[in-house]
Image (cartoon, rainbow, N blue to C red; front, side, top):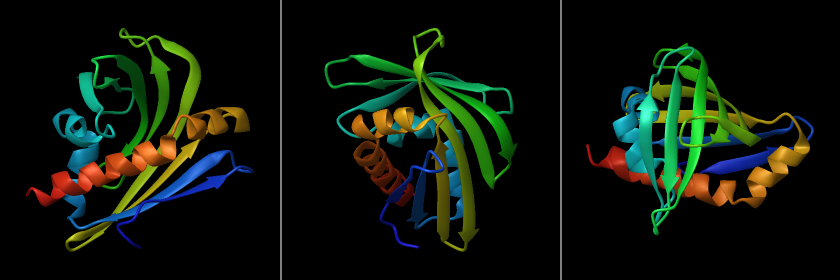
Length: 162
């Protein structure tokens, strides 16, 4: 697996399948995906930044954050954690919302993320599933592929910092 982000659209399964390799041990990659202070450093594509309002990484917990634009505009999102296998995988429902976490109509989908490490290399397998093809196409049209690829490149930079 390469350090290049690979995103495949599976219309029949109503999901995006993402694979990516990182030059870092799985423990370090896991922390970057599950700790708010680290997520804020890489999650948003530049020139945007992520800003966590609250995070409770546990089954039933929520991550409430904003994507903050260069002009200070905010797009709020919430992630509701539905399953966690410590250090290996987690699943979550993701939706756009207001600053209080009240969901809006467009769901971002359901994440299933799995991490496999060997020495100083971690392979990440991510699926983003949708209720319907229309929501999948809306997210793709919003620039998900480009934005998420940029975010994962930010994660490369963060992991390289030590």
